[in-house]
Length: 409
Image (cartoon, rainbow, N blue to C red; front, side, top):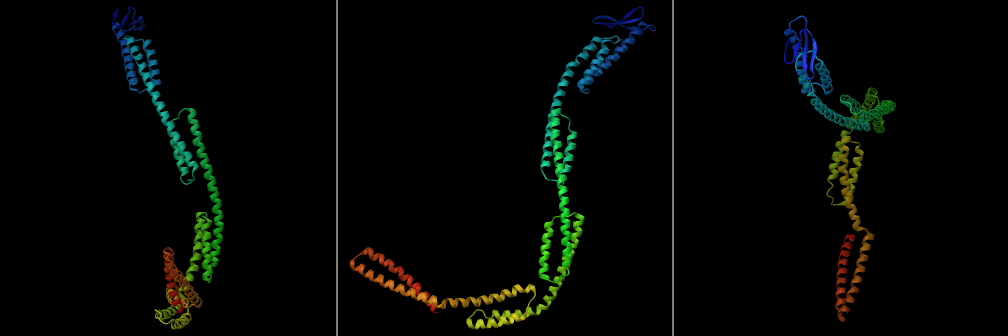
């Protein structure tokens, strides 16, 4: 019989392994020597030992998920316990058992990490929902749809959280997208209606503008074009290709009219240039009347210049304002002096001023008489009052006399 610390070979070729519960037959090796038989079953143990060591490393390194690690340990342990091998099977089983607390710790860590990721995912989803709802409440029809698609992609990239929370958040997110899409479709439908209405209006405006383009009634037609332009802006946009074509028609008709008007005005300006030269000379004559020394002579001379001014005719538009202003200035200067002269010689005002002087002189005589009586009576208080009254009335008398002199010329 051949034996080692962990096993032996019986006389009949049966190989036994020694365990804590005693010997257990692991197999027979009838074709070889007892040494070869022990080596064969010992090699099996070594292979099993290697497998346990590799599993130990993988479990402790965290390569395997806790559930997968527990299942692998369970499977390998079953192989160790009933292994047909010779070696310290109990040590291998103990090594596998020592992985239980490791797996439990890893499971706890994984659980905490999962809870943390779920919390972060929930927070992210709540932010996505809030962003979607804000878009749904707004009117950014141009960028809102693209942003909602981006938010949906971000949502899909996040892990699921607990079912109740996930479903509730998704309901809000989906509802926001649906609400926005429905409002967006309604908006563009309304825009289509408005654009079609604008097309009809602008078609009419372009047609009228074209009908007016050959008009030579410059003033009324220019005013009507301003009205048409106001109506054009108020109509709003039509479909872009139609809008561009109608605008080209409208603007072309407008340009044709105003181009013709400008050409006609230019011809008139050239014709009126000679009139402007005449009026330039008349202005010099009129301005030479200032400053006025003889109003009647200045009035007569200005009327004569004004008659020739009217007879000179129209001037170019860019000269009208300047020439009229200079002529008006001379006229206003003469008229102002005439008005001032009339004011000073107004009979009614002169009479009123003379009457005021008479009344004040009579009142002053009365005050002087009363003052003399108060002095004789020695009434100092009365004397003081009458002196102040007299002083005031004398001041008014001086003013009234000056006014009377002005009105009397």
